[in-house]
Amino acid sequence: MRVKLSPVRRDDTLEVWKLGNILTVNGECFDFSRMADGDTLPRSAINSEWFTTDVGVVGGELVLTLILPNPINFSPEQAFPVDLVDVPDGLVAFPLPLPVPETQQEISPE
Image 1 (cartoon, rainbow, N blue to C red):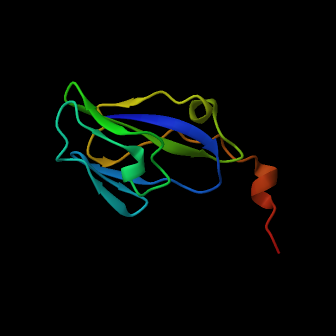
Image 2: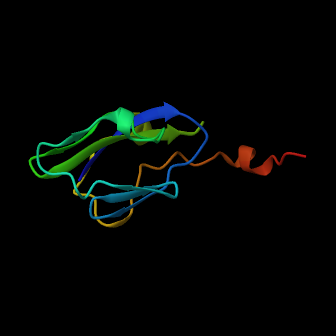
């Protein structure tokens, strides 16, 4: 599986679990296991804001693009992400943001 990432400045979170060609994106399951080499599922057929392009199988590999939400303290790895290749089953690891400065951690909303 190849996951391409499309960075967008957003404050929400993305959690993706992978099991074969089944992805659970923020709790919603998407089963691509029936797709064969050369198949394409149009973006319009996927009811999720997280997928940005068609999903296809190229050379036996599932290829898809997900929005990568970037927080205010986004890192260069989040701003310019590389493709995730040969993604193992389990929780998908995305690039992490920069640490929050201590001055921001100490401020609590009241």
